[in-house]
Amino acid sequence: MKQSIKTLFLVSFLSALTGCLLAWALYLGPGCLEGRRLAYGQERPPVRITDDRNAVIRAVKLISPAVVNIDTSSARKVTKSREFPAEKFFREFFGDSIPFNQYEEQIIPRKGKGSGVIISSDGYILTNDHVVRGADEILVTLSNKQQHKAVLKGADRVSDIAILKIEAKSLPVAKLGDSDRAEVGEWVIAVGNPYGYDHTVTAGVISGRGRNLSDGSKEYQDLLQTDAAINPGNSGGPLVNLDGEVIGINTAIMPFAQGIGFAIPINVARKIKDELATRGKISRPYMGVYMQELTPDLVDYLKLPFKEGIVVSGTVEGSPAESAGLRKGDVIQEIDRNRVKTADEIRKVVQSHKAGEEIRLLVWRSGKQEVVTVKIGEMP
Image 1: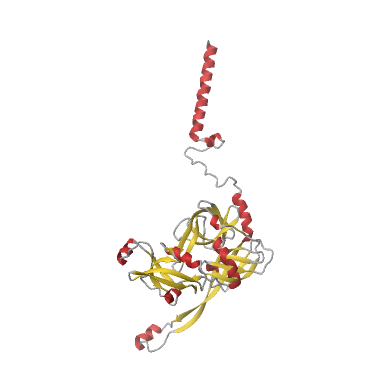
Image 2: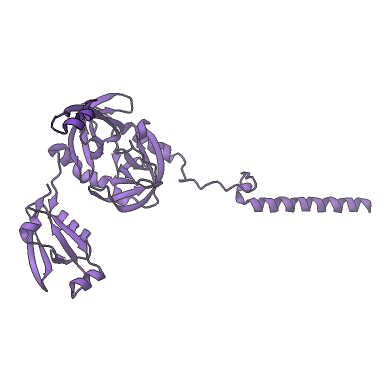
């Protein structure tokens, strides 16, 4: 009888212990059952960014040899007035009749840093226009620490793309991807020279597509947005996918924000790089018109019998638009027989033409429709 009681007590104790252990394991979650132990209150481990944890490492190894550091230097002349110690005393007695001020020129050196990516084995390098703009000397440092003086072959301020050339052979070349296939949420890597820390790697995702950004003097359009860290010195460096393919050229950040950076889609650079290398500039179609999209208030104010169109708020002096007779207050309803709702639709049609070609506009002017033909020019 005593033996039966002991056996029953032992079985009950082991059952209770097993139940407690199972309950504790379920409380911690499946991570515990997989052999991972979490402290009380600790967050669960983050999900891996990819099933293959070496994908980022492989992508970095593929792109790094083709990433270069760019150092620029320039000299700027500044004219400053030189004051005499006794000037104030003499002016109290003689006024401004004595010309005390003399002027002297000072040369102020300026240095800059950026990044670039090699796109041909014979030394052509893709970077940002703003990285090399105004530089008197451009020095390129390769991944193997070799340094070469670079020549600016061409630059385009509109797209912020520039092409450099160094005298070298058999260089590692970056593989250019297809930025049109990049998806929001896709993991990307930025490689560059932020604050002089060469070949720095940061990772993030594509946060958005088709972003517009203005720096006060011009507007950049159709940019890729990423939260991969981009800092001064990253400009001109590549934004790559996990296959090590360049899908963007890092160009800007949003000041006073965290994780908001922008890159020029590589398909934009792909279209113009050869023309930049051979001609030194890009020929762009140009109409020269300032546009404003219609709003319900504008429709009421202008007493329009329609709700869609683009208001001409002005034309550039000497532009094709001015020469064609477009004027402030016109409302563009159609371009090449296609209805328009946004200014971007007009820009895209203009950009699809070449300088010298004509486009047909249907405009509303003084209570009636008129046809205006504009001969596209080349952007100055």
